[in-house]
Structure formats: C-alpha cells, structure tokens
Image 1 (spheres, rainbow, N blue to C red):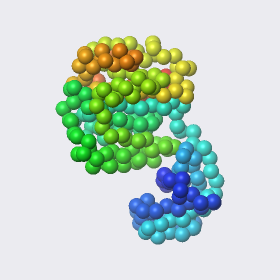
Image 2 (cartoon, rainbow, N blue to C red):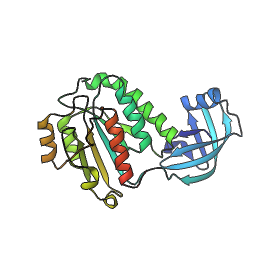
Image 3 (cartoon, rainbow, N blue to C red):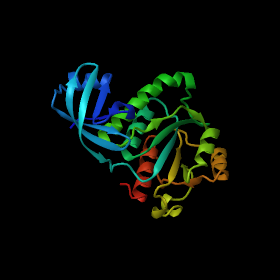
Image 4 (tube, helix red, strand yellow):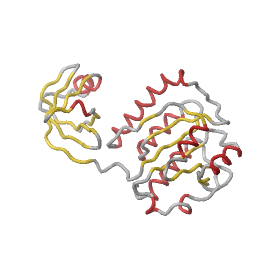
Length: 244
C-alpha cells in the first residue's frame, strides 16, 4: 500500500489533506482513485486512510485506523560524516536512514577533499533531504531524518560531547564498541558517531576528540572505505542496542 509523510497541520478531525507534489504523484503516477486506500505517516503514527477526493493539487483522505509505528529504534543516533568526494554522501545518507539514524550532519575535517561552502551546499542539501525522505518511505520509518547544514570539526566535537554516548571511528586504532558500552546502557540514549572522509583523521583531531570525552573506536583490522565505515558502524550500534 502506498505510504506518504504528512505534517500535523494537514490533519483535521478525521481527515487528512495532501497537497503539492505528493498529490500529483498519487493521482498521475500511481493512478489512484476515490475509494483507494493509502498509509499516511505523521509523528510516528501510521494512519490507514481512504481517498475521498483527488485532484492534481490536493487529495482528501478519511482516517480509517491508526497505529503507532514500531520501526523506530530506542536510541537517537546522529551520524557526523566528514564530507566525502563525489556522490558518496548520497549513498551514506540512504543506507544510514534505512538502518535507523535519526540525523546526518556533514562535517568539514582536515583531510576532506570536498569542501563546499554553506552557500553552495544549499542546493545539494535539497537533494540530500529528498534522498532521506525516499529512504524513510521505503524502510517504513516513523520520521524523516534531518540532513543538517555543513559544520566544522570544532562544532562537531562540541555537539558530540553533549551526547549520552559519542564515538569516533579511527583507522589507526581504538577499541570495539562492545568494550565501552554494555548493550543495556544504550536504551533511550542519544548517540553521536563521527566518521572520517577518504583520508581519515589527523592524529591531532583524534586527540581533540578524546579530550572532549569522545571514545575512539576501531572497526577491525581492515581499512574500510569512507562510505562503508558509516554503514558498518551504524549497523553495529543498532545491533548492540537491540535495534536490528
């Protein structure tokens, strides 16, 4: 059954209105008609609805049933990803959203080759948020994970230090996730995860992280590509916390 995200202000009583491109997609691409059913998601609630009226600009639906979404994890995981080259960030966002990340924050570190300024990143951010939306739809998420503006390394460290648990993955050493946090400790906590770009991190950056209380984590004896590392790390955290 088709599934779309809606805003709270689109719900009025027992009805939900869908406007804009989603309405056009429902009518033209999906060729749905009055009486057809679809799922509309808002604030971690799935509403099973029936179409009452439909046009290219608006679709009015009646709520039939509602249920709380059980696909969201019991941790609030933010991925801080050093900017990679090319379109690798798109893949990282897609897979991280599917795996349960709540937010993805692009970071500029010392070894980043791709260094877009905030102004030039605005257009790219629109596409990245669309990728997050589509991945959230496909994977049955209850929220659309946010793609934030680019921040610098210092800001990332400051934000990471405010999380209940924070980790930086380092190719030259560190300890396993399981040795620093017991699985039962993850529940209902915020988790920050910092991953490097193609060149990894400067030793001085790791020192800054450790002074801020961020745990240095090893991903094993093999060196992972910058697009593989975040997918692996998010998977491990989700598995350890009982969310896989």
